[in-house]
Length: 229
Image (cartoon, rainbow, N blue to C red; front, top):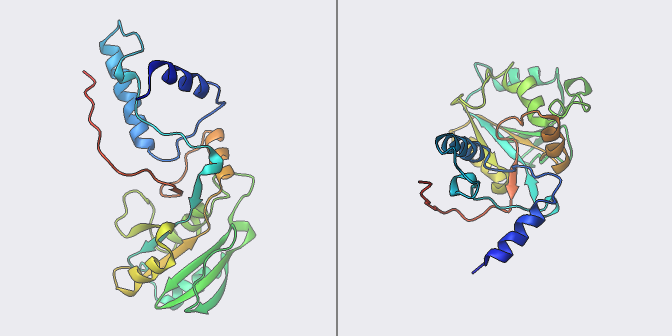
């Protein structure tokens, strides 16, 4: 059992941190903040010690977190044949056919594409990204700007039902499985975002595109109910 003295010491140590970043659970964090504000508005005499002033969170040092890739699978080619898709990609990428050899990106601006049982390695042309822009440098931005939106017709990653996202923890084999089953038509493998890229985006006030990062380790799932009133 943690006593009040230990809790106070932990809180004082956290207060020394120059910044903390929400790596996962942005919506839960925002919801907790809104509920807390509503209850403070209802209880003008609040002291700051009430339960609604807090929410459950876990802090990790950035050097103990790993960001792995977050890949994409798409249901159809938006009316394109495979050959037409490959031809259109050459405008923005250098392509190399690898056959059954998995195209796992080895660095930023490299992509893997799996379609019809074969892998292609894609390397983005220099004019497709901006390394001085925290968002423009991201491979998820390049993929959306050069492939998903103009070629495959996917404009909103949050609402379009033709696209799904596969955490890199499942490996590239999961991408092959989703395509080979006929459920999806094409898959794209991405190089993971770096911790520094995430921090730069947060510090700039920009918003990370959806489904960009998959963090490890993840906490065990569970349910805790605590009444705020």
